[in-house]
Image (cartoon, rainbow, N blue to C red; front, side, top):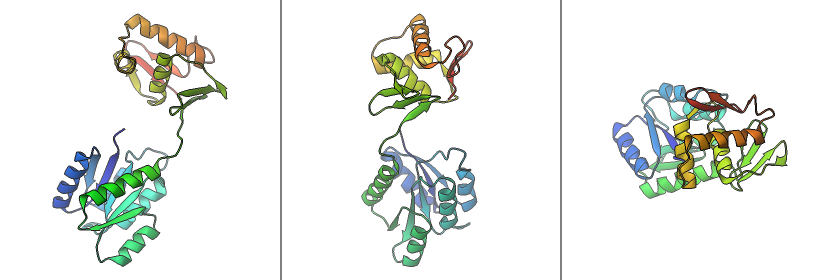
Amino acid sequence: MTARILLVEDDPLIIGALTELLASEGYAVDAVRTQAEAIARIGSSSGAFGYQLALLDISLAQGNGFAVCAAIKQAHPDVPVIFLTASDDEINTVTGLNIGADDYVAKPFRPRELMARIGAALRRSQPAHRTVRLGSIVIDPDRAHVERNGVELVLSALEYRLLLLFARNPGKLITREAIRDALWDDAGAYIEENTLSVYIKRLRNKIEDDPSAPQLIETVRGLGYRSRG
């Protein structure tokens, strides 16, 4: 998955250079120039932040990076924050670390050093072992292991990929065409319309309490399916 970075910087030249650099390394970048704009992107702890890392300049023409960092860490404490600081600004650097920043890079920075710091911060922020849930179904993608209420489920390769697709897109409408494309790409075999219906039925038989009245994977008539975890 492409990591999305929130860049908070008010210098248009730095914004342009950093956006180009980060994009060349495969990152998606959204840049804002003020404290108010940045905080508007943060939201609350009950909602998704949408970014895997924040790159903040301390000194902004309108506001400062400290307030942005504090707001991010309050709502989304697991999201790493890296400050861009002046090379001789020790006091601000220490202040930033004390309020929760994960790292800092001094200006002018070397591109390779900045990329290394970003990569390290992203790796540290990832849990060592992550599972995906859909209702009572727990999926361990690292081991391709699926459990329902603590009991292992035996799924075929296509059933597993289908389940993972729904679990990773909770609440989203997934069209039949999108499902066939995803399974075709993964399995290397074209999935016909009728075959897809068979796989959906088989999967429901294994994960639903009542397959005739599915609660986890619902049919959206004429469009596709939607998972409800």
